[in-house]
Length: 129
Image 1 (cartoon, rainbow, N blue to C red):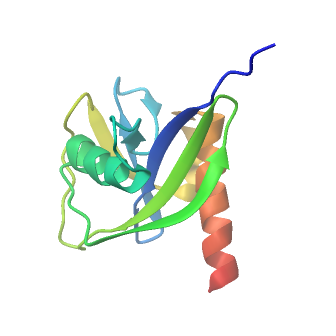
Image 2: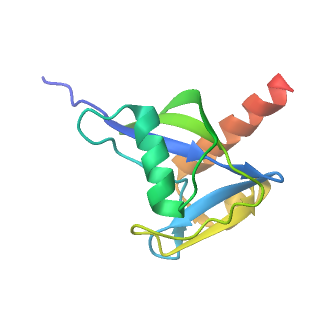
């Protein structure tokens, strides 16, 4: 039996004042910025492009944090250094965006994977500080 090759996605965690940036294509279901790589595109290049397309944010630095293996997708998770004066704007298929305390992620409609990635990110940050 042939095994299916998992999908690959670059996912970006942007943090400001203990809040995480979320995007929504429909104004109801929320996710982290990111997407699938184009041909010959590295996960880091994908993360940078998707962040810019979806939020209009340019990152000063993009750091690979970990890989998260979901049910069907391998997420290459990055964190982006964003200037405190930068203001994200919804773009490229994104209807709205918001900064939300990571403690309130359970209060909105989002995937289990998004919640798990954010939780893992914050526990990793707390362990290293």
